[in-house]
Image 1 (cartoon, rainbow, N blue to C red):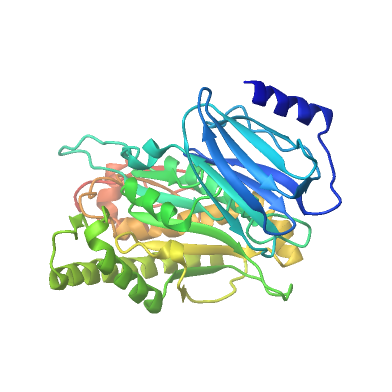
Image 2: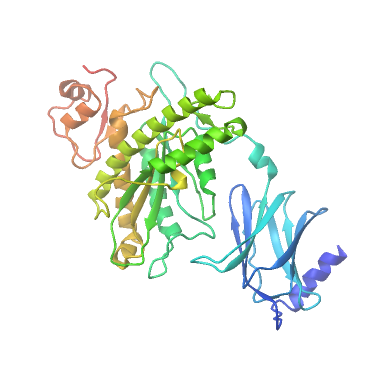
Length: 434
């Protein structure tokens, strides 16, 4: 306790000591996620450091050698699950000790990162609960099975980037992570209002999630579709328009090899079948079948979403594109990536900041998803979509065709006097063709 008090006193007496030489600590940022907290030290160059975890009470000590600190460190939010507060001081004028008071025992890992387009050198310290990674995932909502009910279609909505990763930055300083989160949030709300569908928000706040962990969260919730939302950027500010991507064959091949090589240690399932006890030939066949089916579905869904986006703005490409995005590499979940616009284009940056445009983009993606699942319901979900909400342009004959029922039966089932329908009207879909 004596040492902790001395550190606190040192910080209060001299919070902004500047040294003539050494590495400068320009900022300390804290990002709290549901299952970890990341502390980022922005430094002017690679730094010598040492971590020590102390107990009674639990605290993490970060010792930095030959540094000067330019400002007071940030403080964790009250809702942070791991950090109570962050203190720092120097007792010799050249070495600094930061003390992170922990709310409970936690494990840590640390690493340094080189400069990129947004940041300079960084020392990253992650604090996490080891039990989180070992505990079972949140159970997906259970829906009672029976002759008149079926489970919902689960759609994972992934807002790209987050936390210390802002993504693209527009000419006016707009962060990609912020605007696409708002689009994703609106899309999630629309999906949850759709009968027979349920959305899972992959990133539920401003924090970073590794790409493969995003895929894993979708798999944990038994998602039937994974949608990753982004805003593109290019050095030429005149470039504009939306795009929709699926995994390229090259990317699929590399992922295929990775899964096959790691199957003995993987707890993941492919099409509901574990690979860890299968020989090479059978595992290879199962992977190939699952991945081929998933990619074919991805392309069909992407085409529907691209059609929806065409109605709300310019397309950068008139056809679905293929690329090796890591976030699309799920062999058993159809996955698409939507580039909503070019944030580097001043006009599109302005539109993306507009709540009305965010709503339009979300609605266009929703329309594509709805159109696909009208006629391509996953196995075991024949009764999941028993209602249909009329959107602009819908006709009774098209609705009847998509649900494979007759117009007359649909009309009689809903007590309609004619074939006229209005936007927002809800139709009940008969379970037989009639």
